[in-house]
Image 1 (cartoon, rainbow, N blue to C red):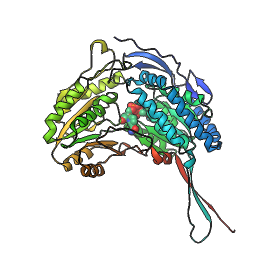
Image 2 (tube, rainbow, N blue to C red):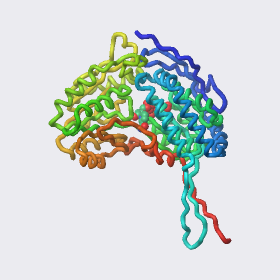
Image 3 (tube, rainbow, N blue to C red):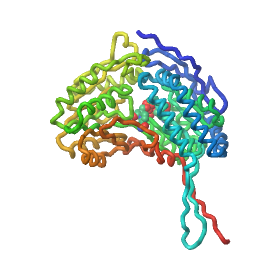
Image 4 (cartoon, rainbow, N blue to C red):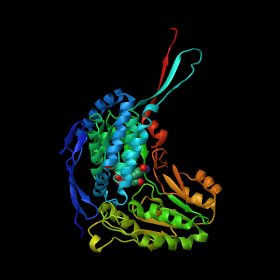
Length: 488
Ligand code: NAD
């Protein structure tokens, strides 16, 4: 068994100017998924700390909004540079958090700084409009204003990406934030909070309060939260929608997916296979919202595609996520490993498709961690649970289609609509199919790559609201109409 790497920071809640090593939600023994052993004890926020964080954010927001725009822009750019300078540290904390391979962790840190650079550029461009008033010469102004304090709830898979996408536009829009990372991945978010302090953002502008469902619920219900952004599962989003009804709080949701990846016979097959493997079982062991877990392949290339996909995934290096040569690490927890292998076993037992490769937990030196082989099923009916429920593990289904209409119909036959992929060398088809796919993002011959200038978000049960681009800024500002009567 490999040793559990040690962490040299002491986790503490960041509220205003305070670091709280103890909190009312008790403690959580955080387990490193690579070894199954405790690597940190996390103080957990309860409603008391959530209330304190919201109050401190409200005070800081007034200070932030009063700063000249150029000072706010300088501070956001300074934060981006501090993130860049801390890349190695943040990346390692990301690995300690949820065992994303170190090969990929720095990319998430890079995205974090890019979002702050991008939204720093918007700070002095939050412009308004004027509108003519019928029957008078009054001045009518339409402006965008902050909500005040934004609650940001992030998931464990890619917490820095969740923070990047929501916190950068929220601050650019003049808000303060209370970030609630989950108990499974609090370390990198806490370091981000420290960096916000180090560069001189007003104390309390960015509060980081790790906690579980109780803390999340307290944040959702808090009357001091002007808007809540949630990234996570649909099941939790539905509870949040109910809890937020009490205060009629505006919400935006970035949720899960069961994304289709449509491969036409005229595609560049080498590239299509690589993307299907990478955006399927390999990236974060399939624990990605953008996982292309339903791979639809035109029948004439169906046998060859299966062979190539199996060859691409069967021999990827799996192991210690701190080893830079490893492409795949473990899944996040013992419970996740049980759930994923349970899904695989049930599919095999019920004869749902043919298991082409994978399906098992890894043993030997890796037996104490939560490592699962990349797993590919073929001939999976789209109506089966395997094709309809988000597995959130290294499991994909391959299924054949005969016509473009059939491919689109299968792709859209899902409650989700986060992303979709298509592979074709026919530009007209690319354009046509993209318009027919029910998803917030369509990636043609491309990896899914979130970028600050493009809006990201879901159709159907994959959520509502958009982060990235001008849409992201609008998500965190509300519209005011002011009329000034002239000549009264
Ligand atoms: P989750 O829904 O279990 O938890 C997400 C967050 O909600 C955590 O911080 C958790 O502590 C908190 N929470 C739990 N119960 C709550 C409650 N009752 N009230 C308020 N907050 C509560 O999701 P997860 O397992 O952490 O993350 C995986 C899910 O997130 C997957 O479905 C994945 O597809 C989705 N996801 C979506 C995106 C996207 O951009 N669309 C990105 C990453 C992950």
